[in-house]
View 1: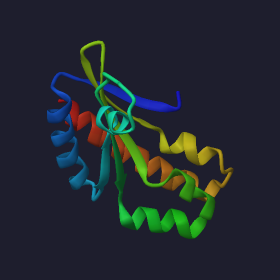
View 2 (view 1 turned 60 degrees about the vertical axis):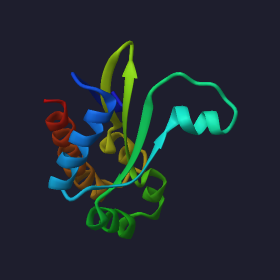
View 3 (view 1 turned 180 degrees about the vertical axis):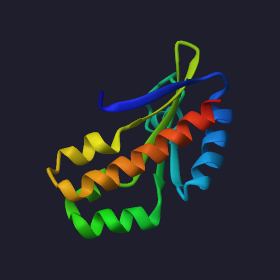
Amino acid sequence: MFHYTKEAAMSVEEAIGRLEDSLKEEKFGILWSVEMKEKLQEKGVEFDGNFVILEICNPQEAKKVLEEESLASYFLPCKIVVYEDDGQTKIGMPKPTALISMLENDRLKGVAEDIESRLVKCIDHACK
């Protein structure tokens, strides 16, 4: 699977708050968020889904990755999406290991594994 997704027994808004708290513990911050329903409606497109895309970053980790491989910038910042699917709130992300594997750079595999492990921990903690 290219992604990691968990169900959360709470609203999208509560899940985002809990996720933000757990991300801070791992030195990740939310750079910005996009509420897709609002953004699409601004563009004249009706959309009823509740999807919030969070762009997150740990500056020290981003620096390591970018100094090793400039093409890794295509994957940064990391994304976590909080959304509703059939009335169930979900939190998910593309796995950093899956993305980095496309670059075929063995030196980045360990960094991606560490980042992925920490982000999985954040998502799991937010879903409790």
